[in-house]
Length: 442
Image 1: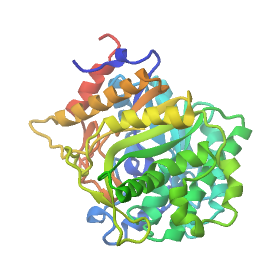
Image 2: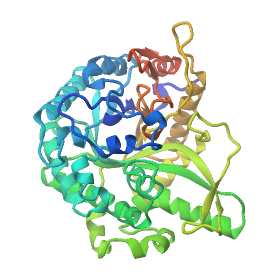
Image 3: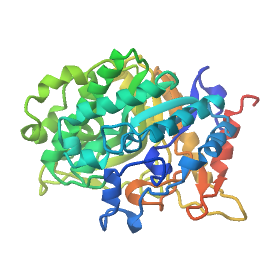
């Protein structure tokens, strides 16, 4: 028998998550260009060269989308505000863009949904990208100005504010691996972005605390890491990857330092005097967001430059993204965060979900494999709570199929199917299964 809301502590929140650029569309509301527009316009970066110009047209269809959240018996909705919509030039407020989010938050409250806001889910205004973006130390003050402007309007009504979503993607995936915007493959740019993204977080937290804002957190992504063998070289390679992916950001915030295994490769490229920023970075959080999807098996790669590692294909079933399905990793991170880093601090699973090549047949979408994935990860969350992790909520990624960044519109993560020509929404069987599990009259 599958879990229901009654298998979790009283007050545990269930919801779905989205991101502005991936669902809203950028052609309306005075939205300015961002570095994702530029990245997508460059041949070879995104599947079929697709961008977020239309996405799911959530900008116009948000009332119906929020109705879907409510109809699924969810308690909360995680959304992001777009820096490029609120401040098209990165500096000055666009009243039309701010008014959109004002209406959106009111719409959530009218439906009894708790608004969980994320300030940055990767829409860096092009004007700031032209100045170096996350490689420029000034990004910290630019971001704090943006955070203050948004919070002055929305801060009295949102249930929580996350500063930044997945700093690893903002910095490493985008500046070292070149897979996301701005598409750099440069170790010096990566080292600076890895630090500046946390400096921006800390500067924004300090600014918002000064305004009296509470319930501030950050959303970090984690990827279960295993060594390919018991050989010392493979064990050391896995420790380096664990440091880059899983430990750099949480240790920067909670321990006010970075993993030594990673500084071995990055220290000579770090901003001068970076150590002086660590007290600002390490301010107290009110909660931590954990995003989790998969695991990686890592082996040493002695022929490579630092980090001398390579991925080893795993044997577990995989999602449409090619990611192994390993719910035990979520349990592991939730208990690891509680044990090693945050103690009794509230933790939310802010993203968990799977891509699958869904099809509409006879007017319906059957995605039983996604149902199994969802409930396996809910069970992993329940086990972590039983072991003492103070987990307060679970958000599925995502509500609708959407623009999946470098994957364009090809990979479908949603509980709700979207026809990207007509933009018609159609709840999948996973949506209905989740709604049944969350019903209060079960």
